[in-house]
Length: 345
Ligand SMILES: C[S@@+](CC[C@H](N)C(=O)[O-])C[C@H]1O[C@@H](n2cnc3c(N)ncnc32)[C@H](O)[C@@H]1O
Image (tube, rainbow, N blue to C red; front, side):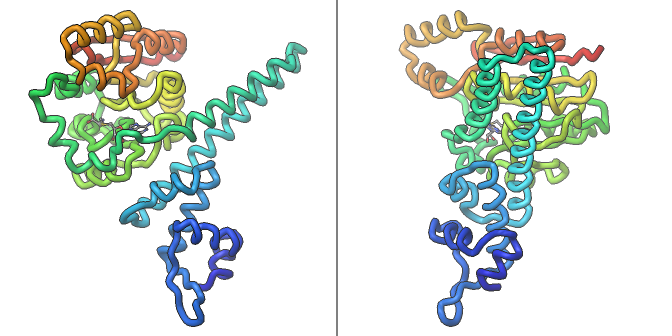
């Protein structure tokens, strides 16, 4: 179809479509008299671009997201992820307004409150927009399962990998038919432990390529494009949340938001288990880094500084404040498992 018809179908303007074309996001076929013809695949792509723009993604970021072979399922997956992001932002805005209204009713609403609440909202939005995959997980996807078996480095982050996954699955003790979500599922190694026991698993990941490898390995999994800070899952939809080797890819100031997202999707008396690279607290982090420095293990120092290993005490604190009972265990200098059980009164 021609540009005017395409614009009508997608409820947008020919000018907008032309703009995306100039940016190299769509390349319609040129026909007679140099007219552009939009095929079905162009429409899918445009529809996805419009949805991603709606949640504030830049054209550059969209270009990256739509690179390579993208099929219909992946387009829909990306659109769903964008809609969840939008929905969560609107929910956040409503909560902020509710807070303002209740303060206003108690006549305690000050101008400072208005600015603070509005600022909080902006910060959350900004965090979502700013996160970037600086490790290029798309590129790692095909080799990932092989890379976790590699040993012999002076600093091996995957030491005790299998033990950590086993521990997470033992702590969660999923019953058949329960629903769980694995965040940063990668190639699905952790989720597989639960699928084996008959649980239903939603796998969330920001990397399309990881999701592709995962779907080949585990066709039964419900795979969703999404982010720690905006889970493509409804409120209270799952019985448990798990995550392994993923939380340390989001900065510390975003971790509480990620925990709040886990809490949002969890049903009554739900459970959360996180296996990840972290330190017991700030003191322990400084002590470990100093030790590696002393040993001349620069590889370890750089690896730790390149990522965002959590301060476990802050995570525990957050969970306890939300009424969770927390258990932890440490598998080596950098690998911990944190288990939190929601106590609904
Ligand atoms: C090191 S891999 C771990 C994969 C798997 N959980 C495992 O234990 O083998 C990290 C995964 O987390 C995903 N990831 C990183 N940051 C993420 C984020 N902010 N939201 C969603 N997924 C994320 C990456 O795309 C990657 O697939």
